[in-house]
Length: 94
Image 1 (tube, rainbow, N blue to C red):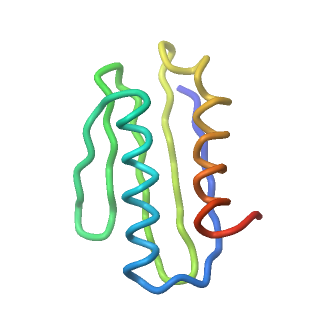
Image 2: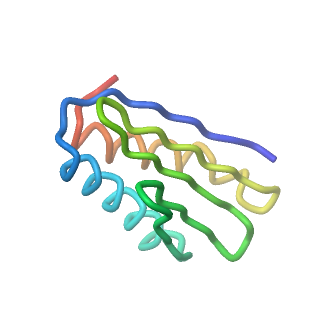
């Protein structure tokens, strides 16, 4: 299993950070399908192929981990680029 991990520092308040996380996962759902569930502050994305993502909005940082399986591994670079583009739009570049 392949993994994408992105941790981005930010100066957003709690609500803004949570909104960025929701937007990011919403883009994954719009592009690839799947579902999103909240577990407290942590948000989890799951696709029928077994691809998963965990987004943890925290004070000062947003942590994203995507696990790709054999079927979705070829989309890894595209997914990583999409995540970074969304983060750049809302938070700014690394």
